[in-house]
Image (tube, rainbow, N blue to C red; front, side, top):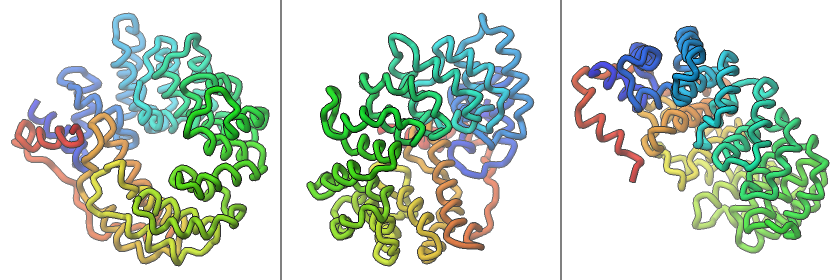
Length: 399
């Protein structure tokens, strides 16, 4: 157990643990001999980190499926999601059975694991989940999040998504329809009703998202410019700026207002305004310093700080953001993962941040994607397994 504890500590806390650490986690989970809640959570989130063990995980999953009546859905979910996270289609039979048995996870963040699979293969199963009557709250939330990640590939599910406009999941449904785009043009009138407040279930945040979705499905920016532009002028700017950014030059009439918001006291508003101004005008000069100022190398993953968002937008700007390269390289070379998310999402959150950093460096320019310093795999001391260090990092982010 001490060896496994050390391995679990390494994979949760460090980005580049020694390969034996992941091997120990896979061994424990696949055999069930010394597994733990922490080891299970690690493998669920592992993705490509355990790709070298894919055959072993697939064989263990096959054994579990053969004994399905005697096996907990949690054990099958664990192995299936480990395969799905690396895009391995051998996860599909298990995912279909899990969906039928109501064993999909309840955490929205776990949807990104299944998003690595081909949408065409899994979408029929997810459409079945959305057709459940009555709808199951957590399964519906999870499924709508997955469809939003798939975007246009989720187009066949439009009929199922539309019914969620009449439920507490209306906001998620609007986002999915917008992500799907022109294939959802048949929903344009429904979207317009939400954008203008005519829909019975219209909430405070619905009009801007619905107006954006209306533009995405119809190509007509009139409604989106009116609703989102009015929101920015009225002071609810942080909720309208991302949509104006998507509209780009079509939102030129709002450029001055957007630029003024780059001096807002709110960090998220400043970052959203900088991105929107660049998208609207094509001028990166005032935007880059604002975005760069938001990139804190000591960020722990706190969601109230737009650090990852700023990195993403610097990458989209590309070469004109070259002054960000040394900072981004230094962050990418950092050994410790983000500490703020809960254990159940820590690896996923950190890997997403690493992808954002890597992608930004690649887009900013050739040669910008290397780390600032040589990176060495971290191997834990065996004595660390049950010590205070392990207890301390497990406690982070739970306050």
